[in-house]
Length: 263
Ligand code: GLY
Image (cartoon, rainbow, N blue to C red; front, side, top):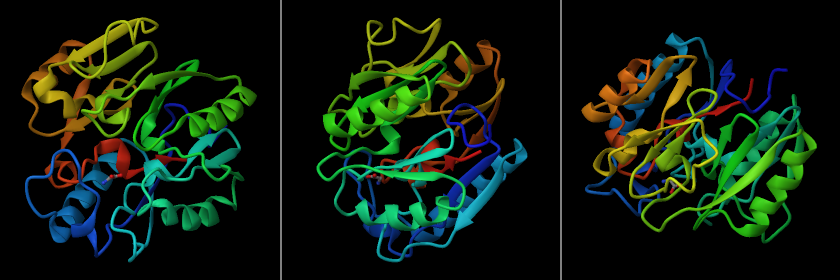
C-alpha cells in the first residue's frame, strides 16, 4: 500500500534549505562554511534526479529557525499507515518534527515517542524483512526499542547496530538498494555485522560516503565523484545517475537525508 516503508519511491517528502544553512550541525566532514545558495542549487539537482526516476517530489517551505530542516529523512519513519515521529537526537533539530507531523497527519496515524527516547530516521535502513537500526549519538536504546515495537506490528524485525564513532548515522555508511543487497563502507561495518545479507557490495573506506545510495530497481542514484564506487555499482548491474553532494557532505548529510519517502 502507498506509504509502506520499503523501496517504493512514489512520493518524496522534502523541505527547502533553511536560510540559516550555514549553522547546520557539522561534526565529521566540515572543511569550510556551508553555502546556502550552493545548497539550494544542489537540492534542485537532487529533486530533478528523483523526478527523473519517477518520484513525485513534495517540497515544504524552509523552517527558518532550523538550519538542518532540509534533512527530512530524520523526522519520520513510515510504517504502512503509521508515521513514527521520533524525538530527534540533536537538540537543535528536535523542533523540526512538529511541522512534519502536521503534514503527515492527513494521511497517516501519527505515533510519537515518549520523552527520553531519541532516534533519527538516518539510523534506519530498510532491508527486505527487517530494519537495520543504528545506535548512535542520535539514536538511543529507548528510541530503537520504540521503533522495534511498532515495526513488529507490521511484521518487520529490527536488527541493531552500533554506529561507530567515525560516522554520524547508519545510512551514512550503508544502504540497501535492492532485495538481498547491502552497500556498505569498509572500515565502518564488518562482515559479521552484515552476515544476513545475500550480497554485500563493499565500498573502499576512502569512498565510504558513496555507500549511501537511492535505487529504483536497478537504476541507482549515487553521489558524484566516487569513481571506484561507480565501477563497483556498474559491475553489480546497476545503471548510474549521480548528484553533486559536496555542499551537503560539508554538514554530514548524504543523498537519503534529503527526503523521506511516504508512498
Ligand atoms: N547536519 C545533519 C545532522 O547533523 O543531523
